[in-house]
Length: 332
Length: 189
Image 1 (cartoon, rainbow over the protein chains, first blue to last red):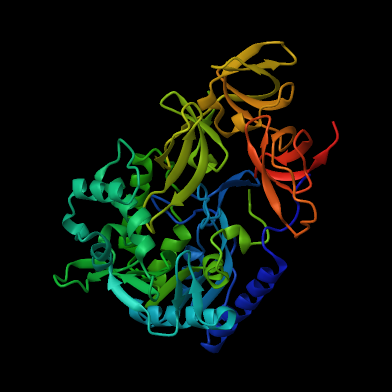
Image 2 (image 1 turned 135 degrees about the vertical axis):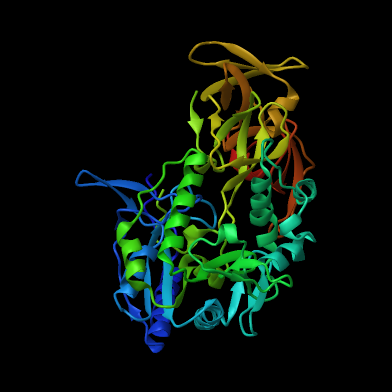
């Protein structure tokens, strides 16, 4: 018989509706404007490792947006002030217990804020949702993480070293390979050094982060700056780093935030570099979003932004480890 | 040769690696914040029963195992091999005890089994969920003992040992759930 029933229980769907109300109230209290931008876009965010589902619309190639970032920045350049959006984001080729090709993202931009201020907002938001839904606790696979105390903050290099004992800047690939073996992770035979570092990060390091209390990982390597500005980092040597942060709770990545890059020339150069990486790995390049770059040339106000995976936050409040348990239906 | 992308690698999917057939028993999608994706799979080899781990890159294609399922009858054991027959083609083929795995405990002559064929070769046999088997040995129940849930071990014709209620006697036939090994009910034969 065709299984037509929702994958989430009705109780969880009620909790989901409650969480949506909490998020909306949170931003409303802060004077942020709720906006909606189209899910179908002429150019998805250009990223070497993010793929947008392609669609054809009236004979034109279009994409389902991997994030509403470009459109929201056009609103900011138009003078919207601080804005937030709760809406769908799409990722082709991503499916797993914690990944769904269509998921719900809470994305917001705060004017006159940097990454540190945006982490404060993120911390308050996560605490508000956890308090309303699960007595302030986030339940991961092996631990319950309290959101009551201030969240930890550590740089990417500190986080990597806290689990591996190695500074990623000069980590020996053979030692990383050994670490994967000890952790029971098979390394693909032809893995490059970059792939081994990605695998260590995704399969080992991230899963150990935020076990006692949620932790922000700050100051990412400049080659992973995405849309964050680059500035002297917080590590001891003050090396340049990306003003980018991610939040982890119980080994689960919850968000990705930036002190936003506003320089249109640097932005254009990064889009080209990401497209070059796409082509080098056999993927099609994406069209450059001319309206987005024109908006940056007009002027993006100084702001920080964050994109938070709403479904994952809900999963942690419900103590489930299958994203199907918090969405009405899975896409496939 | 059908190829699978990394998002197809889910539990229950049958794949071929190094010219060996495997079934995926666990799958874990790994994607660091701004890096490439991997799928870690736990796979069981149909031929030797070994379970191993593999990590597959997002741009890698995996060969789908060309596996066909047919319903066949169990015929007999000759001490070394267990013989089956495809009721449609009358083809006969055999399994070793090792390759039958747990199913060896549930082999009843003329009963139908679900057999998987890989490249024409029988690689796995699965018993029906419920099967009727004769009890060949069990101690008599103690009269008057009506304690709820009281049970005793019974040896079945297939060699399996199943806990049965005290009122069930040697020589009777019972229905068993082969997935759990639980007694379900007495049956008349």
